[in-house]
Length: 223
Image 1 (cartoon, rainbow, N blue to C red):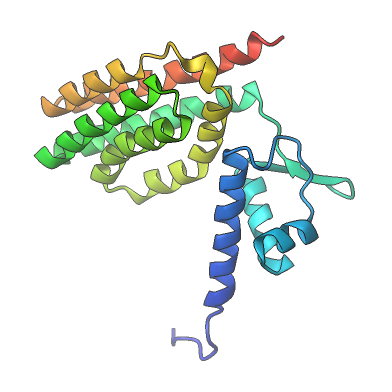
Image 2: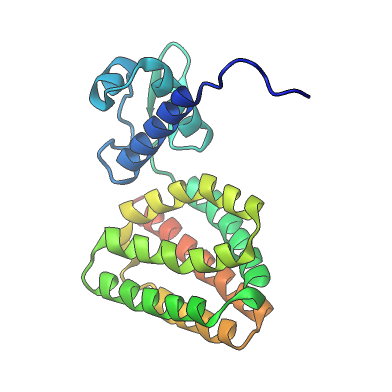
């Protein structure tokens, strides 16, 4: 098939992606609160973009579960829900475990040292109750294994799911004070360093499922 003669609309694509990233981040950090109405004109003025990339970005956010719409009624930031925790954490746990089983045999010494350093950063952030730093460090920790796995489908699936996970974590951070993630990370590092890919994968799975249970429980305590 010959290359099409017309020029690809890369500018529009970049604007759509830019709008998606900025709206996603605003939802994750609470700038746009759960249940908040989203109007194209207001978002376009705020972001300095036209309505077309805004609409495309909102459609993608809806697909990823961060926005919900009711025809002829509203478009709004999706409320936080225990159902999201119950549905999403087992899937993420399975994907991250698969990444570990594929990635552990490919880890380098530098990778392992990165995991150790990042886990120290994670522990420091938890002690300081620094939500942003804790979530960023946790992303970097798990990202080492995802990158080592070198599986694009795992990475793509996690890109779609992780914003929902991080939104729940941020909102429920105070309920996670007793989490054992630092110790669980240390065990994952030890198993990875020993080359025990399947045991590391199971430890990763337990890490994510434990967090999901804590978040689910935090919703139940409100009722």
